Length: 227
Image (cartoon, rainbow, N blue to C red; front, side):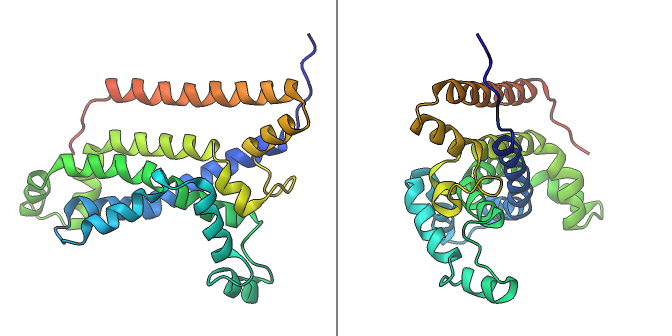
């Protein structure tokens, strides 16, 4: 049986989107997770609910409101259009923003669990030895939370690979610009091109299963490190 030729652009674009999204998620997810794990404010459940919203909201609902916000009349899209000459909807940057919101709980939750499990005793011990809070975070808390970091990175990456509703609403299906792998599969099915749809779906399924298998294996074997 002949193997159908593939358009690799959606695959490359999807990997780029997942990689950039994970980097952005780590930048904003680490401080959010740390704060949630250590704050005692009575408003914490509100912030936890906001972070967890993408877990229960239909992707099209989240995508719709992001489309409005990032569009030419939105409170983010309008200033972006004035500065850069175009709104953020139907752009790669818009996809990154949408993916960041949609995958946020998949990064925050593992980090939150890891930071909360550490407790304050190791940090207080580091502080009594003269370490600053910044030093204690990077040399004590982060090594102890390494499993949480690995899980967050892998889940954030894998979840971004499989996004459909959010990226379709915000980015559309522009070849070479916003057409990611999930949309390419959908388009192939719509045109009854099942051979390409099978190949792309099997590849995505196998790759996602592999990276999840690796992270579970690493988490089982990885010792807890304390600096």
